[in-house]
Length: 350
Ligand code: SF4
Image (cartoon, rainbow, N blue to C red; front, top):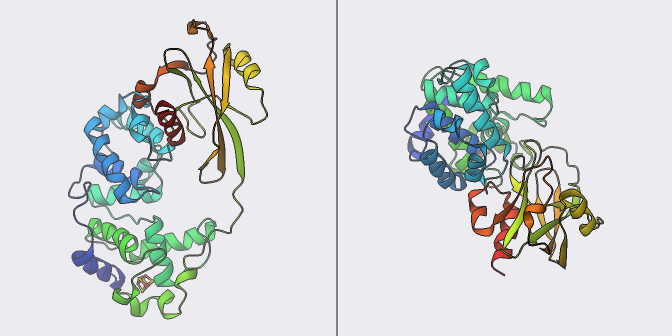
């Protein structure tokens, strides 16, 4: 065992997190769900989602046989919905290709939807005590600072350097403890903007600290300006206070979630809704523009409120897309993107 891993494990013994809901188990299913939810998401945000999810889907079998709408509904508000779709797909892979048992080798684990090398390493070490390095954002930050690794991780030569270091410093024993310890070390001590160097047990050997380079390590991704896109979201209500919704295609932004008709800003709303869905509308009212930010662009949303003028709403054309008139109170049971949910709640409270 190297000095580095000894120090991290000793630190964890006294200062690490020991009571998170997904700790104290070696059930690979529970560990997997937590690891996927924790990607890009804070522990405090994840806890209630994790508990609700496990209550509804207590096993890989229950998840595999669930309807994707229900899975995405439980994911509503957690963001990065591809994670929820991949979780569902991987559960089906485990049931169909691995007889319902989690694989125990890295390649098989990485063949599952949504499981990359670091997540696979975490599941294998937590569930089966197998020695595999992990390299999530917290671990990269710690390694980069302690060992002075420069360069953006998105470049393959830099990524290779990080994996070599992670491999070298992963101990042969106490693998699950070390994995949790280094995650906690990065999440609570060597944090992104205000690391607690004054009480850090690695201070003397840490290159970032001794060379006063904490702010510059790890190296950031070269910046490109985030583009701004715009759209109109049409909230069409009928006389029964139902709202017209459509399910998005399974891939891409908000894949598989229920949303509203979305049009380019300069599109003629009446013509477009009539041509695309056979809907006649009137009483058009423009709402306040608001911004939703994705990881790679901003979306400025212009809400437009309209009323459906034909009481026989069974007459609307059904396209390839799934469309439905949905009672406002029933939208809570659907997988909705966060800004659409916000818009519908605001509309319902008017
Ligand atoms: S000394 Fe500071 S920067 Fe270095 S590992 Fe410790 S907390 Fe992180």
